[in-house]
Image 1: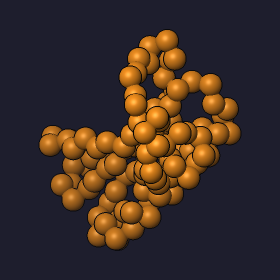
Image 2: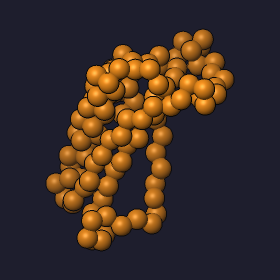
Image 3: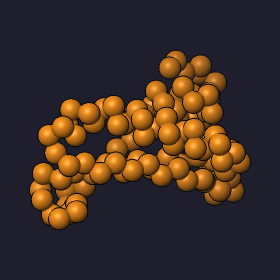
Image 4: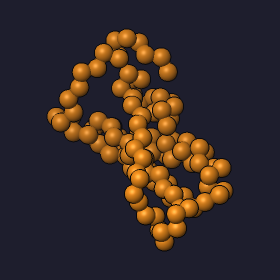
Length: 104
């Protein structure tokens, strides 16, 4: 997913962050414990065009879909991607990664 964000050319690398959250308690579809889900929420600062957000969403779902190929052959998996915008006024940051020349 990190590579998709880098390859999208929509962001400076110092501003890209990828994190995961594991849920211990969940129920998917009919409750079969073999079912799984992965929901990717992409949060970007407002102002990018709809085509750019669609490009990012499509690149992300394709990258994750490839990662899940083997697991999908063994179990039911629901994959979803949501691209949301962050209000500039409510996004407060202190980031020295841009000035440090982070590598991809």
